[in-house]
Length: 134
Image 1 (tube, rainbow, N blue to C red):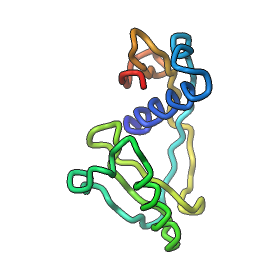
Image 2 (cartoon, rainbow, N blue to C red):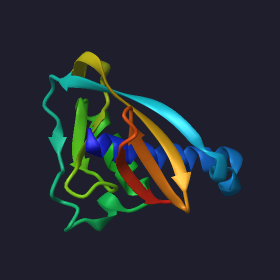
Image 3 (cartoon, rainbow, N blue to C red):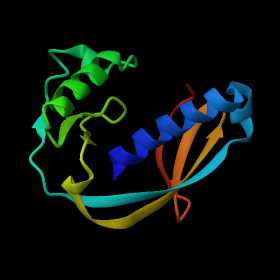
Image 4 (cartoon, rainbow, N blue to C red):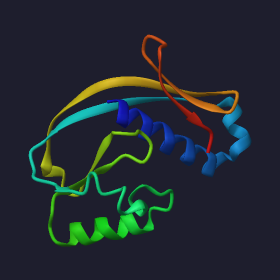
């Protein structure tokens, strides 16, 4: 779940800033429920390749999206890749819903900002992730 929290924190903040502007982050608080699911499909695995192909973890996602389209257009169910936001973490892009099963609510997190740092806390209030603001 740690990788999912880091990725969700990053993307939620970017979406918020694009809608309301960076100054609005001063008052930002957002709750998210993370869902886990079993993957029953064989996925294309590009993990471990980011050291050779740095564009796999760059902020500009255009080449990654191109790779994803290439894989999806060949009727593959999805791709595993290194997380750009959580060192050692792995993400999955799933292209076909039937590749996933048994969804469960896994964890609730709250995203806030303090002193220019984005913070994710779990239901008990414990900090579980942080990163600089975008």
